[in-house]
Length: 244
Image 1 (cartoon, rainbow, N blue to C red):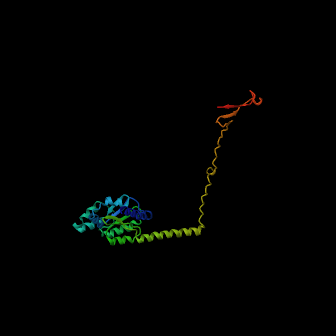
Image 2 (cartoon, rainbow, N blue to C red):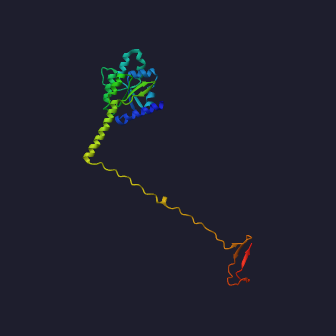
Image 3 (cartoon, rainbow, N blue to C red):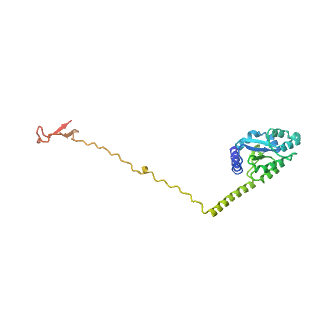
């Protein structure tokens, strides 16, 4: 189940990475509700978030989120202690606003900021709905005692489909204005290797030829060389010699 969860997160992250410029180290802003839930479930955010997202993570909070936790009093001290361990993102609110208003403001601003691409970690469902209505904003939350990444929102999916449709329209306009698209040259098929078609050469077999013939008792009889001038049966003639 753990590997399935990680693969699902990687698939969601790839959309934000290739379409909206999110790159490691990922910058995550947590609010008080997320810090309190992490405290309750005993989740070490500095350890779990990089493992889940598969890359280094910089964890932030804001002055507004810290101020809200302080106002909640002793019941929020655990979450406040976790929030104080994080970096503090620059927010322009003075006096501090509500945490949900602060994070919504930073989300709108981060869409056009190439350097500050924030992911937002919150348990506040009303804030989650506000962030889902924005295009290209990743949302993290805690459920089943683990950190999770919210699926790509409907608004983001519609924007992605629209951008793909615009690209197709641009291609069609270019085709009409500039003429037909150049035909890609087909790669020529390489000829058959002539060596693979070459017939195998047959080795010539060497046949040994005996000069004589064998007799019935297994002895070989051969003609005596020379003595062509002698007559039949003569001493120096070409009589046959028996060889054992």
